[in-house]
Length: 321
Image (tube, rainbow, N blue to C red; front, top):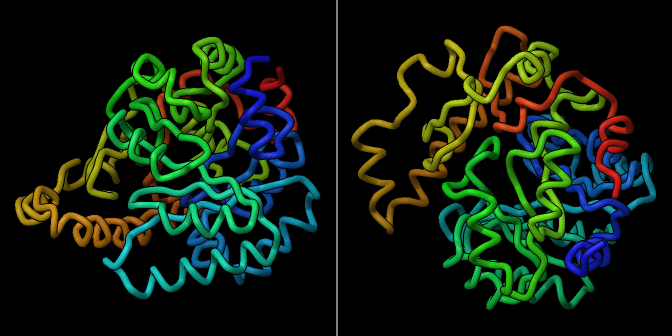
């Protein structure tokens, strides 16, 4: 076991360097708990927990704690002042997480400085999603404990560079690096750890489990699809998101129109465009949890190595050191 893996396990309290990434849909409390219970680290996606699966945030965390006594984390997307209501809600969720003794935060977007300060005051580790070296260095300097490297093979909001490039550029950055994207089975897992990563973040593999509350058609599509069935669209969040090619996805095209494109290119307007797209995307993708007729299916290229829908316990048996 390399020192980076050891640091990751110390930071997270996990037994195996596997994170169940926050997903919408997909991050129901039963899934989060099952991953942690079986040695990984489940991570709560707060909007999925509350708006999609209908739990009060505190009670949702307490439900996970009833299902497992193992550590789990919470994801916070940082929009800053772009949405004051959400910003206040995030602060409330963060305070509740502290009170419920969560010890791991995964932050996304924005500047995590204030989150890092609050977390350090309460003994909480913070890892941050990064798409490239420039942002990785800035996040390291902001004091995060680790980096979640989003590569181009990931599902949902994907990166633009390969896992190998991240490792080449960041191998000496001084904090653990988690490979997020493209890991579907034990061989992928071993290859990533051999590169020098401290752990992996899985999303698509955990969607295709019995504990995940999404439609059976979504799970079967993951099993039946190949890498060639994955396409990119910027209509979900303003940056590229990886989805399974379906008629629902292709209707109207994969790219945003000229008005949104202009906003996305304008630094002062980009965050508002992304928030609008994400709110629209939430309406579409919420239906994929419960309606088999809706085929908005986010997934990454690791699905080519996913051959069946299994229990979380069986999945985690593959990913042991």
